[in-house]
Amino acid sequence: MELLIKGSTELNKMFMALQRTAMGLRRDFGEVENLQQSLRSARDFVNKAANRIEESILSDLLLVRPSAGLLTPNVSRDGDGRDEFVLALSGAANFVRANPHFAISLALRSNDETKIALIYSPIDERLYYAEQGRGAYVFSAYHSARIKVSNIKDDFEATVAYNTPDARPLIGDVRRTGCPALDLAWVAAGKLDAFVSEPLDFAEIAAGDLIVREAGGKIEMMADLVATNGKIEL
Image 1 (cartoon, rainbow, N blue to C red):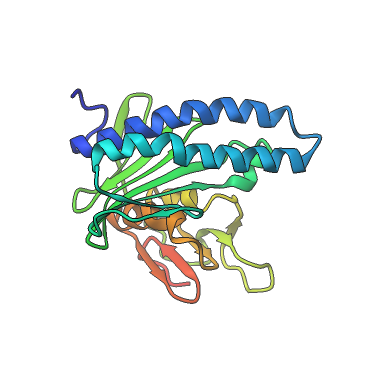
Image 2: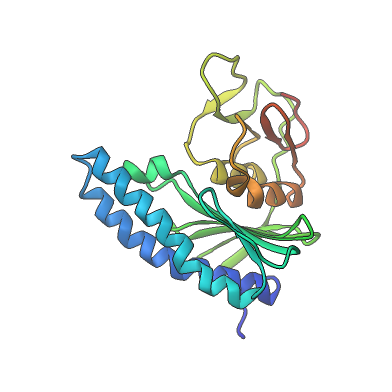
């Protein structure tokens, strides 16, 4: 097998599965743009598209680890009890409004540890990925580059993405992107210095968790999920 990106054969097989699924998502995105006069119709369409992601990618993933289980926000399938694929469409509300800022988050976990993580933005075809102990990377236009978190130390100078109610104090230069998976990837890549969120479905953050850590960042999941460059304290 010819490797597309720097990493293991399993990582590359997972990426190829994402690419095949993304082709359908890009077609769906074009349809959503034509449904903007009816948000209800657009939401129904996107919900069906999310279900198709699970169906279309499952057969490809089972070629990678045939006995693995599957966890998504809507589906849980038992496997061998050791391996599990964790999959989510992050930023679905953006997708509904024909906003291209959404992503597929995919992780492979073994014995309750994330081993491989991918966050793929279908519209601009940019992939953030990591393997445990091997660093984090971004792939675009047939080129992989290693990514690292930012060096910002002052939280008031930080650019911080939030996925929280407006009632709480907000620190730094505030962003609200609506796509937690990409927010985590951007913390890893130094585009953001931190991300603060209410608790999220684990399927949406499993990949981002590993990518942030492999890029040198810090992530904590308590009352809130807080991901930082490891140099600022929120």
